[in-house]
Every structure is written in structure tokens, then in C-alpha cells.
Image (cartoon, rainbow, N blue to C red):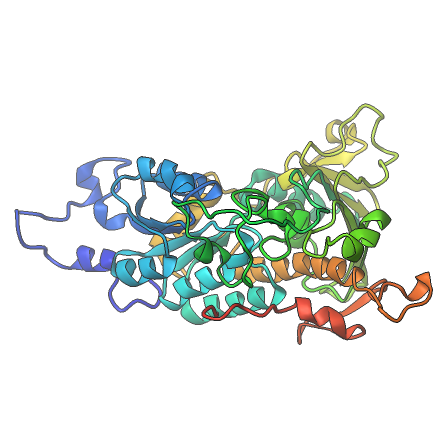
Length: 474
């Protein structure tokens, strides 16, 4: 295990255990497919309801992981995990869990609202624990950079929860692209049906009692104090900037994964956006300042890492769609319900569904008429969750994961710069006399990735790194 001097698993493996005649039995004696106790990964969950519940269940499916503890601020939401894993110790505060259970934990899964991803993940990394973190990796750009650096420093196995990154589809898409079938990609179009929760809403008002079985202060985490309101918890938090990252945070790490994984890009240098005019007008006047917009269009420019020009990525959400490719027949589906992505190359186009699934050349008849490339890229038959479990057991440096933080960190930065553009778009100029100057952020933003700064609009930089509430830090 990475930086641990003596992990619990290694201790059991290498030390004779006295008492009750207990001994470690080799796997070949136990039988094919049986995993010895010494080869199991002890996982603690931070977030045990909703996605946290399904994540913990996925880790346990492979038979190589024990769920030994989990923390959740809401007893009601965590009830399913309590029933599913009766042997696991329950905590409200993940910090208390890490302190008390640290010696029994090999790895940590973080499945909380975006707001607390970074602080919870960093706490685990600094203890030398491997980490699996739901997408988006962080709430802020700065946090993504810090987690990426910390994962390298502490030598832990990492994975972001964009499951399509381990799918066959994105690997098939990569083989198709690398074979030269569509030439060099110059443009990418990606879209989603999200949000499917309320956005473009006035800030909630009124007083509500905090549920008796919930710790609201812990749910807020590093966010500035906000009174409890059922508009935020348990589900609709994604639509509020203080806690979530909107449609982009929910789906861009899935849908844009093929572009970031396959194409020669790293950090963008320019970003611009637009949102509905009626939402812009309501942003200040009607008290919508805290809510993400109902839809947006984002244009992101990437210098190619091979020095051969640029690749322009257009993202659309809220039901907005790019123009239907002329090569696609009128009745053929363009993506699926959740969204899709199109690579536009100098010699052709590839269309895929959400998660990079079902990649196909356009026109789709080409999939039958031409010789498709052979499968050359290794698949992940065990899936995204078990890939991480197996890599943790193998130890840092002995196995690779699909969305390790050296990939997921910069990728998340690219996703979050789009939100930075949206929030900048809404900035009003109180001295403006005409429409042209009414909104300060209606401009293309120039991004200095090395220094994590917008160079041509200083007010935008307040969204790169937020101020944490007292008592919380990375």
C-alpha cells in the first residue's frame, strides 16, 4: 500500500496471528475465485445515501472489498446502506470516521454533493488512503489542481466516478479516430438534456426546521452558512452554485470524456458562453443570483498539444442541440436521451451517445461498407469500480485506472472553466447606461492555465477559488 508503513492488509499477510488457531490460508487452497481475507480492500464511504449507496454496493459486488464504515449527515438517506452493510460502523462526520477508523481503512469513496468533494478527498489522501471520487472531481478549479498534486505526492490510487471512462465505447471510438477514418478533428459538439432538476430559480426563503435525523452544519461543509431549506436537500442541490455545479458538473465529465481522452488537448486557453436573456435579466432583479441557469451554450478553445492548431469544443445543455449533421438520416437518433457527442474531422465525423457509447461513423452506412479497425486498446471487463478496487489491492504504481487524477484533475478544470464563464456572464455593471455595458462578463475570457487565472477580466477570478467557511480547509 503506497505510503503506509504497515497497512492492515500487509500486517495480516506477513504476520502469524495467534489465538483461536487462526491462520491465513493461501488462495489456491480456498479454491478458484475465492478471495482470501488478506486480499480484500477495506473501504470507507463518505456519503452513503443516493449515489453513495449505489457506489458502495458496486464496490462490494466483486468480492474483493469490505465496506467497513461510512459517514453520512442524513440518517434517512443512509438507511439503505445501513441495512445493506450491517457490519459497517456509521458516523455523521467523516472527519471523526477517518480519525477513529483510519487504521482499519485502506481506501475511501467520496459520494457527497460537489461542495464537499475536495475537503473530504484531501483529508483521505493526506492519510495515505486510496480514493474514488464522484464526478465532477471538485467544485472549484483550484481544488482540482490541489487534489491532482496531492495524489502524486502521497502516491495513492485514484479514480473519478465517470464510469464511461472505462467503457468499451470510448475505446472503440479511440480506435476509429486513431485509424484516420475521419482525419484530424477540428470541432467537437456535445450536449445533454440536463438539468432535470430546477434551475433558474429565485433564492429560497422562509424558515424550515432541520430534520431531527440530519446534521445540517455538516451538510454545508465549507460552504458559507445558509439556512436549511428542502429546496437544497436531498436532491436539488445541483442547481445552486454554493453546493453544485449545474448541468456541466453533472454530465460533462461523462459526455466530454471521449474528447478529453482521445484528442490531443490538455488545458483550454479561451472560453465564452451565452445563457437565456430572460434569465440574465432576472439574475439580479428577481433574486436568481444563487441559481445556475436553465440552459447554456459554451465555446471552449483548446490548443492542440502536438502544436498542430486548435480544437474548438461546443457544449449545450438544457435541451439545446447542435445542428443535425447532414450525414445523419432524418429518422436516425442523434445521441441518446441523456446527450451525445460529435467529432467533426477533416475527412468525416463520428457520433456517440452519452458515456461515449455506441460510436458510429457518419453516414452510419459506413459502419457496414468500410473496413473498421481492429480492437487494439485493452478493455476494462471488470468495470470502473472493480478496476479501482483491483488497482488499490495491487498497490500504487502497479496498475492503472481509467480516470486517475492526473487525467481527471485537468479534465475537471476544463469542465469548471465553463461554469466560470457562465458566472462571469451574469456580472452586472452598476454604472452602465446602455445595454452594451450592462453585463460586464459578456466577452471571451482568456485563460492562463499555468497560473489558474483569467487574464482579461479580473472579476472572473473570484470563481477559481472560493472562500471556505471557518473551520474548513484543504
